[in-house]
Length: 453
Image (cartoon, rainbow, N blue to C red; front, side, top):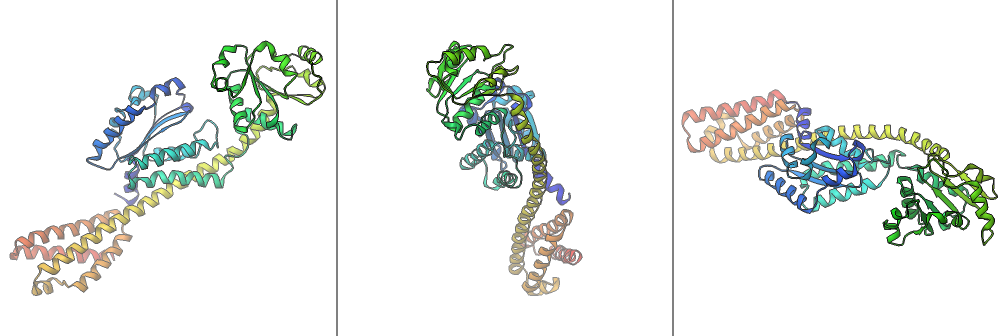
């Protein structure tokens, strides 16, 4: 076994089961796969059974877009046995299974938002950090294994610092709202009318709330669909009957429409009549953000006074330019992850070798102590043992150990273990035959030191 193979054997203990939206797992499917308190308890109990024999760490990640279980310390066969204790067993075919180095790379990519719906978003890194911290606090991640998960958090920081992955608009909806900066000094103080209740409209409402806009009116052709929405129930937005939209358009500053329809939602002649009939005449600026496909707002409206109509093309072009910049950042981020996995392997190798050296020193100290207390002066002289000479031998073996490949390390450790075992026998039986065998083992150790040195 080479040094690199020993590191790969450590990585082979890393596994992840993932159900995520990017791989086509629907919201309903993810809902069925999520782990509730009783499921998490069953998972923990199962891991604890394995911990009677070995160190096993795990943590559970649940976000809007993914359900994932990470496991370290178990073989692939054991990993699937542990999954049997969770709802994930119901739909193994829906899961993405990552193992060995691929699982480490997946962990790094998820933490750094390379596997997110919106490339470069920062929410997932915070969710991952909390999940890892919680798992560590609850002893789900053992101290000796935290090294791997902490590496993922460090990779995320490196990617944030060295790339522009998180810069710029992250969606068409957000780009549309940002475009208002060209028309208003502070658009957040303006009154908005949002029309529609589909994904784009809901995303726009979410952004409006996050941006701090307080005056939001919401209309939809099916009013029941919005009346039961938390935004309305919590009085965060004001619902409006759909038939009242033209009257309300005369009063608001911004109209954002995102409806799937074959006919325009806002027609020029109806808008013109509504403006003429308005009880309060206003020449203030009015901006229409048309996020519908086909278009929701008739383009002629921009001919009326201070009305402006911005369509999807303008917003998508802005997003496309940002995405092009992100693609360059994505390539750099992937290079950072590749390099980080290589660095992790080197760190693992150094950590493993440090543990091996610690075991070597303990073994050498034990042998030195037994030799010093068990051998007569004559026999010590015969085999060439004295404490000063053994310290030189010990130093030589440790230096050899640091530089040697795994096969040589195994030979050194095997020779030392053989000498230790022979000493244990010698302490019980100091016959001539046992002395000869002890002498052979000690001479073999000296020869190994000379050879590798």
